[in-house]
Length: 289
Length: 272
Image (cartoon, each protein chain N blue to C red):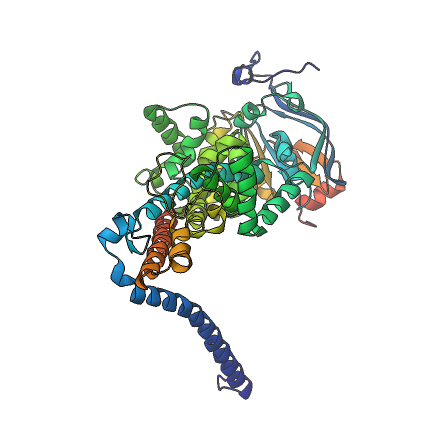
């Protein structure tokens, strides 16, 4: 009764074929990551030290550390987050919880999607026009961060919206039925259950902001600065631009220096991602439905 | 009609209470509900008395759930839904209420499938009091224990009030949602086919709870089990395809004193 027919055998063979095919595709994905990390560690690992991270560049950036750039990247990312996270979350809450489905919200929707598709160099030029010149911030951390914030807003809005949408509608209706207002419902039931998704979006934004070069090179990041930024109205060095500079613009840089800078940059991004994954796992463990 | 903002005090205010004369809790006249151009319910006229269990029976698509939704103004969340006609709740026209949140907080709702909010058992029941502004832990404790006891759930959960409501079994979750509805200290409790996902033993327990609750509130019981309506309801309305076919004293309907042949057929199980 359960003897294998030739059809069974064929189905099984095909099934195995596809399983192996898909598995190989998946493995292919990992290869570039391994090669990139491996190369960076092999060629740049030797330069990483406490001094490299915490001292200034010397000898026309051909020696010394990367401290101003590292600090500058943290400045830029932090200010960009301060601007984009509240704005993005508020917009997402409005779109998902308050606004109905009408031509107005559809236009906003379309605008967000298009904003995500704008090339970063266009954002850079917009930033120069809007923040550096029109608002008069000059080339500064503020201008660079706001440019990045606008660029990454769609990430925050879309990811926040998706996580709000994942909270079942029945929860909202049960709350409304009790006489809760929309805001009470959002604060007590919807947001607490969407937090993990929202955080994931924010951390994605952080990793993207950390690596961007074009939007900041005209708006606030400097080639080289002999001092550290004192406020958001100062220019600053940044890791991504520093990497570009030491890799292509300055003669006589030792081989391991650019690789070291790249390694630090990628380590920052990976660190951020790991924190987000860990945090998400923690929150998912507490997931309530 | 004067446009009155409703507050909790005015809803609590008992009319002159003569025990022999029942007070009208709800008066529905010419109620018509439609979704877009599709009518869901038309020309409903009846009233529900205080301390009555009012049953609504009828097959799917009869308009029963739409009726419940119109009572606590859930149409404000559905732009597609239009409600016409008049609904008086405690003598107040609910279409004109400014404070629909106060109205909703006076009406407890239990859905067909239990909706345990993603909160602990305690918080599920404490949420509504918290929304009303009760912050003191000791007051909340009392309310939580009271409501869970009345919903016949306290003994089963008193040792794990801080575990998640969604970890309870289906029948327990449904009793939790009843406890949550009771935590609103409602005037009116609406149950929409509450026993659909509940085992027969639990159903019987909940039915006993409802008979008990009747002393303190008015209950509208939508059910697709005609025998359940017979067991519980003082009066019963029969809805069919968007029409309120008949309203009558339950026992009379079930003993054949009906005005409409369709009611008899439905009760006897000939269709639906």
